[in-house]
Length: 167
Ligand SMILES: [Fe+2]
Ligand SMILES: [Fe+2]
Image (tube, rainbow, N blue to C red; front, top):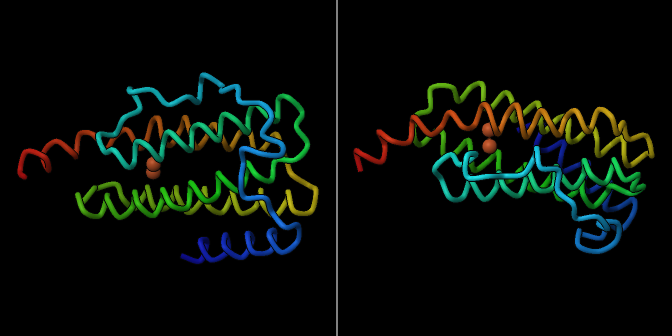
């Protein structure tokens, strides 16, 4: 919860500082090429429509950020904004769902989510003072998409089946 508050503070600071354009389809989102390695496919499905659509969105923006860094795009602020909001909503919804199904590894999920939220807040802070560590950000994107969504979240599936059968 503290990390979420930190995240909000970072955003309010950034918005105050620069008059953020909330629409990522404008401005610096020039390149829409998606890094295939971070593209959502049906194999990533956890069997829950909302969580799947959120994973898809997160992987999409991660791929866009990765590509923008590779293309030398200067201003990543709008991308970071979309990533932050998407991740914040997703972590909240996912934890709520995991509580509902009594997921046995929820503590690890919550810990991972808090760490990701902290790292996102740090990247926003770095970006706001012109000191964004782009290499660390790229590593983070892969941690989030490949280590967490692809390897950790996919484990939900086996815990969904008994719940569905009991309904
Ligand atoms: Fe997730
Ligand atoms: Fe997760």
